[in-house]
Image (cartoon, rainbow, N blue to C red; front, side, top):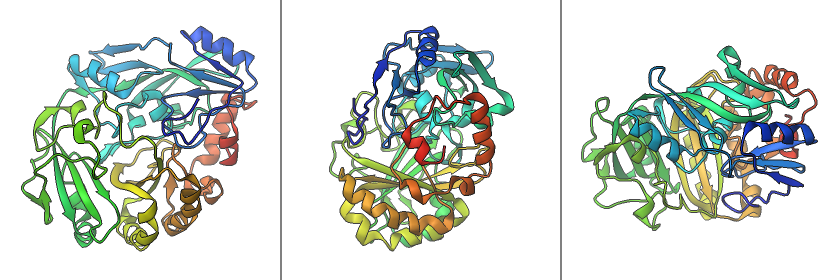
Length: 410
């Protein structure tokens, strides 16, 4: 078994395919250690297990919409694209989505995955309850104040089989692309660029023009549709893909055409192979107050970045109060790098990139590649020690552990 990009091979002693929570309970009780697998879109070994790996390929894809309470209960294994179709048909929506509709809801929220927008929070912020199986085999539901510890928990508390999310009435979005935004214009008009729509992504190769493409997703009824120029960047007249030269058929609709939220907020369509495929990814989050300085510092590394890079994406995310969320306590700029599939070269360069971002207390994405020894999570996350105590209460024997988490001090 491999992850989505092929850079990680899973080597469990046993793979279990549960069809109900009872199957999960039996597997957890019998296992020495156990991990759960989502869509395998993580680029490190966070989901790997040397003992038992639980995969949800055969688990019923429950989607239970509570129209009165404006909530939806979602089973592990359900992908965001599948959930979006069900919600939209019932007249509801999610506040935001990530760039890929192919990832599972439980896996994405557990690792702090996000979309974009100055007022849009991490995807996990929508969770109102979590149902999971503990190491003892007992099933519990976490809600209320404990969700701060459980929404982003890296699979270390137990095996999640359902979560419940808040939903909103359905809405429409228009997506417009702009080319060639000068570096100085992004720096001088950072809030204006990133606030040009409901969700904004800047794609760059870190060349002389820092931003090659700006993808502006405007929510109808909230945002004014952008014009022909965006801080001197020109509006696209042909369909684009984040990766220059890639087939644009899989990219979501553009040119300012108005359509359902789930057909514009992601960058890629559900029924197409997302992004590049065989690639590596890293991502780092800095306080938005440090955005200009962090961008300028990374720009100085552009000659080292360019030979390794497929594309880089810049996004903003509003803060939340979840203890292990990468945006906990601070509105953030996310600097995302999609690398060529050269693991030795990328891993050799990451310490340089991470040292450049260290003055800004950059937090790495839990599901991406980073240098294990670089980050002091106790320093980066104010409640990290408190989270460890909570984890120890729920899993005192550390059944939901693996070498990757141990390397991070978890």
